[in-house]
Image (tube, rainbow, N blue to C red):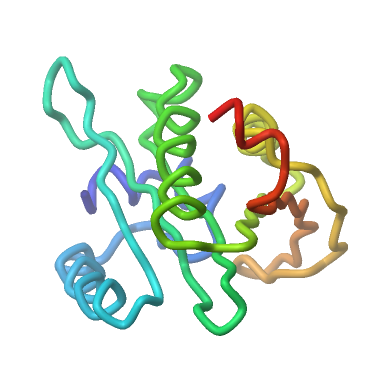
Length: 160
């Protein structure tokens, strides 16, 4: 996980994944998942390639139970980009969030300089809601962020 997530390409397109990834950082990060699951504040899943059983990425919902909303987040190893894996996993996680967790809203965001991630959100049926200029700091730079959202009542859910 550390080797896959810590590539320069993944770190450059995510807010919190560092490069190089620290030794033992993956184990520390994974250790937080059970508490988040039990408290209802997060669910995390490994994305596995069916043919090989190889780890290819991660997808999660960071949940705010008091507002019945969550933020969808994902990363995937560069060797697996543009193969539909994030879209497939995203559909399953959106369905789970709305159908099983009873969420009202799920949103997602990406750096404006990473339009590929926005295409995943569009394929999921999420609606582009706006651009937040200079919203987040990554390293020494302030990044423009594009926000997408979906409500449980959106008709696009029928396509999931």
